[in-house]
Image 1 (cartoon, rainbow, N blue to C red):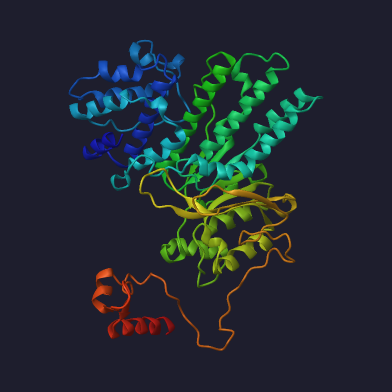
Image 2: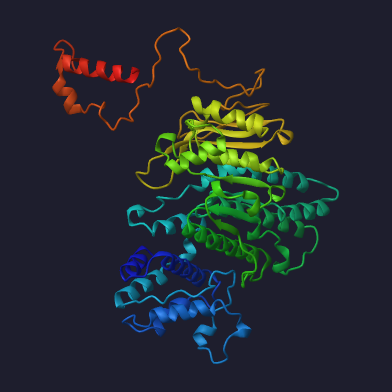
Length: 536
């Protein structure tokens, strides 16, 4: 797909049109191998058999197909080419609007055929969105999984946020001896009313995995209901959980559209599982419902316009991490405005703005929050700037938390970020037991403990008189010494960092002790100058 992208871009077909073309092409490739297009392989056959070897008419055939996929079968021309007529009506606005026709040559045609021959049914939509996004940037196109957040880490958030509780409730209902069928039906209806909102959704990984787990739970409910009395075998009326229960905001248009398509892809996979269980083919084509993925800046958007807080069940995701020293002027201004920090803007990480927006949002509803964050918001001076607002202004409580661990991808050589996961709920809805997951090292598996309260520093607050207590900064040293303006930290552009070669040239060895050195006068002066600068 990267080669398809590059070839089209080099031909002059770029920007928004190229992004839309690739998203539509992705859907066709996936549909061709998973049964959305029947018989399977008709898209590959169309490209191989009906287009000229020199690629001169390939763009026209694909553009014509995109038009056909947006026209209901009963409204199509009676003289339509039979190969095109074999394709189903898709809807969902995926193919709405015509795109300029791209130009192909023989080499570009071969690249596309190669993509058609790949087994797209082996790709999980959970990973595919992020990988597909990397196609758009040659510099970002690395080893497989470079942008993929592991499902294991996503489960660490959605488990305690909602999934564990739903499964526990399901287990209690299964164990009932009376009114079991009635309670299963009510539980099934409740699953269909849950709503999920990711205000920094990217390519939709959190929404995709959440949808998959909700559909899997629904399937288990349906199977359990069938064991007690005969269910109707029409799969189309069995499943009530659908993609329109999921909402997102994404600042990039291309990943936003990828999130939509990936959600439809996951929907089809789960429909196949339902079909296998109940012995019939179930395909939601044409697409009648769509995930609500909005293109825009989440910090400048009124979330209530996307989904009213009173109708939202869960706010979740992995908002962007940008330290205060690395934020753009616009980002710093956003954090300063949302946190009402005044002129200085404080030292809050960019992710803090999502916590505050979410806190304000859930005041008007009962939604629960679960976000991944850099661990910096639970350490040092950021705690006093952020947490009193969450605790007192928005009246939130920590319902669960993962202490610091390494959050990364499956890519080789990919640097890990040290993060925490924090679940928040309105004080009135706070559970009696708060779940805390701790790690011996950042790469270990967590151990779980339960407490009556958790502090903003993510430790047990059960025995504390004030669980909301934070350490605040003061302007003068308590002991009357001169004020230290800045400590030693490597943000000076490397001027105060000494290389091995410099160290060896500026130090003389102690002959009596192996591998020990005494700094020369030059080095001692260097250190004194650095200390003096930090104090003035």
